[in-house]
Amino acid sequence: MKKAYYPKIKFLVDLNREKNCFLKRNRNLKKFLPFGLSFILKDEFIKNKDKILSAYLDEYYLEQKDYLADSVKNTENKWKKIEKEYFKKVDKLFKNWPWPKGNYRGYVSIGRSFPRYINDKSFAFPMRTWKTGRENNDLRVTAHEMLHFLEYDYLSKKFGLKPSECYSPDNTFWQFTENLNVLIENTKFWEKFSLGFKSKPKPYADCKKLYAKMKKIWDQDQDIDNLVKKIFKC
Picture 1 (tube, rainbow, N blue to C red):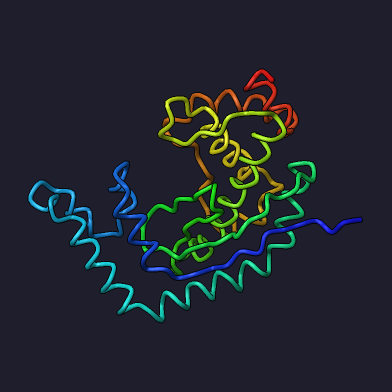
Picture 2: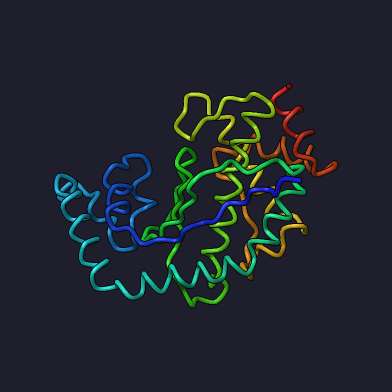
């Protein structure tokens, strides 16, 4: 029997990528900006926001070089300890659907939100913190984003659904995947990956209507295929 493929994530520091993510973002930039930088969106600074942000990132990455490298190593080591069990649980949830192959990469970020990019199998994760209850937020983000890579492949190939993102005219597919993550992350089955985080995951505000519908179906049997068929009528 052919051995199953499981992604090996490369955890990295990349200043140019971080710059690119911030400087090209127009939608919801405020919630992505590092703490203390929201002032660049004020009228008197907006014309120079890219210059200010770029300079800030240059300085931070230079001064905190060791801290960023330590964050990457810390996350890499912690992920190695749980990845085997993680993939085992995901296999059970998705009925052993094969992981899409690719160059999976996680980039440490100083931002406050952590985007993922389905096509190139990359995502951002937070820096190391010692704040009580958030010490493993990097792993929670990693576990969450990795689910998305499999979900997009599973839904599009098994059910023929057309992928979307939050900004798509019809973003039902995106809403479904975000809500599915919330449903999964609130199960006892997933407690291992809550990693001490006290608050329960909640749906985004613009996903709540669909979430309520999905939860009623999910609570019956926690079966993803049944959920897909009833929501998308396929």
